[in-house]
Image (tube, rainbow, N blue to C red; front, side, top):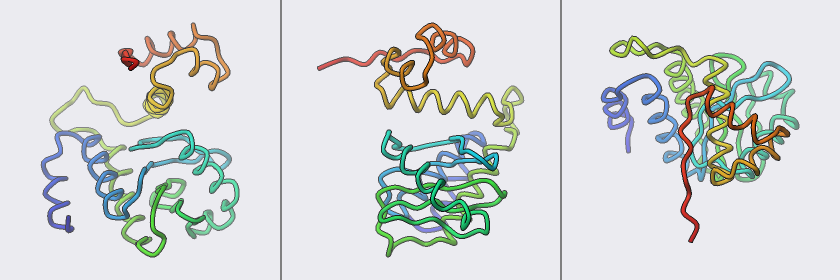
Length: 187
């Protein structure tokens, strides 16, 4: 897909969150990545904002790149380790994580600019959907919880162990963030 086709996809997005997801999907395809994620930082830790195809290994990989490359990332340099990359974007404190890439195929400028588009879309209000809020801290926590639930096949006991909380707390979060529990059929 070229840049014009990508622009057409963005223009048909129904809301800013949809535009952000389409942008992240396009970036993943452009770089041949297995997974992609947008992260933000408060200076000491990373918080997941949006992800596609992320698993436990991807989460750990992003945090490891963050820990080992924080000096370079602060100056705008990407952290690349084998087939993983954490790329600083605009606004400052936001990062694109790509996992399963061919480092020779990595276009850092395209990745950073594309991620900036997605991040800006996440923080924008929908024009035609006045009930939609900005992507705030609760939305980030909700997205991170959904990603964790999917990673652990909606097994609430496992999610509670990973998060270090009780199952009741996980149920409370589902209610608080209006998340409908998915049932995974075991084969």
